[in-house]
Length: 323
Ligand SMILES: Cc1cc2nc3c(=O)[nH]c(=O)nc-3n(C[C@H](O)[C@H](O)[C@H](O)COP(=O)(O)OP(=O)(O)OC[C@H]3O[C@@H](n4cnc5c(N)ncnc54)[C@H](O)[C@@H]3O)c2cc1C
Image (cartoon, rainbow, N blue to C red):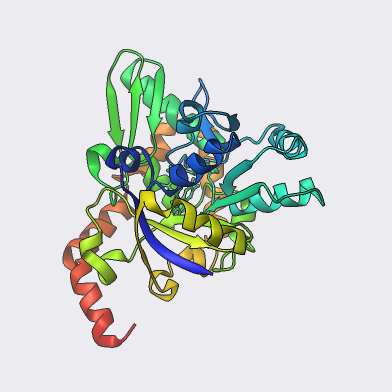
């Protein structure tokens, strides 16, 4: 396996992507071969769904992270049919979705199949996202039209605020959904026992945010997004050599980029998680936002701790302590 810090040479591609735009570089290659791209997009009700793309315009809807579980519909059947027709296919999704696809398609010729998984610490329930969307629609008084799950253009790569655009043209950005997501109470139960929390991934390429870049190569980070790209197979190494002219990249040691999803699943207190779901079911969503959102007691406490012990101080302490 090889690991790279990588970013697409075109700034507009990076700004439209979650991290460094490597997904666009890989999918451009497959589209160039007349191939098909599968990925996750938002539908007209802003539900996350997997879809099939045959050109760049359709593929562009897959760019950007949607922090909610995607509905795969009959996508695995379509992937298999495309492969059996002899087409190139790129399938992208979470690691468990890639494994699901592999076991579904079985022993057919996969020489033209490229598997791309995204590093994921867990997917929240679609119910939570739909309730949050409704809460925002009621607040603004207009139906939601589009959502940017991590508005990089306005707030930079490292920040996490969702921006929703409404039909009346208004925009609403907030950290509330992100705080609820990072509480981890809303994840699928299986995410707490994910068997893919290691650096061994069952795909050709793994895409992640290159967190840790500042400690290793600060000059490579312009806060517009850097991908950590894991090249996991012989097929992927050959392909990387064909696409890397559209990337700025540096080979890195994965040991310096071991964020949590490379090491273990998220853990939550089971009783607190049960209480959270009970509240989601019976209370108005405004209550969930006030208890788990940006202005919850816990988040205020975190902000206070971060103000007292800034990251630069924590990093210096880690270096002194050798960890
Ligand atoms: C639920 C979730 C959790 C994540 N957790 C982490 C994390 O812990 N650490 C980290 O470094 N990065 C995490 N990511 C982000 C992931 O690293 C980026 O999606 C990846 O770096 C791709 O960046 P890019 O710029 O190359 O691609 P982009 O152009 O942004 O492409 C996005 C890719 O993600 C896929 N995708 C988007 N939403 C979903 C979804 N809901 N389900 C399945 N596939 C989806 C698309 O199909 C596409 O292939 C998470 C993303 C999601 C959706």
